[in-house]
Length: 81
Image (cartoon, rainbow, N blue to C red):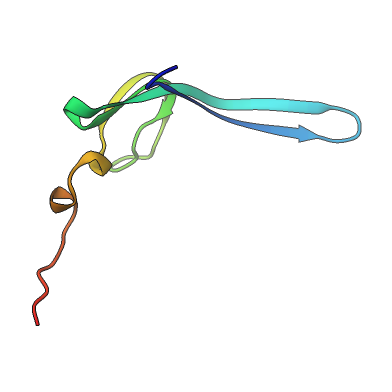
């Protein structure tokens, strides 16, 4: 798959009589370093930052702060002394 990563969230329930496999979501994702973003294709969720998170099937391109240099991530106070 190269730079692509295949992800899956599933669960299995079983007892002595039967087994049940349930797939909640499956998606492909890869980093887009030129955009400092993550591309996700398949079953995914909205971020839930403003409204409740919902699942959808499609394409999502989202910023990834982990790709930013430390100096550009979050708040870092100046410490003196």
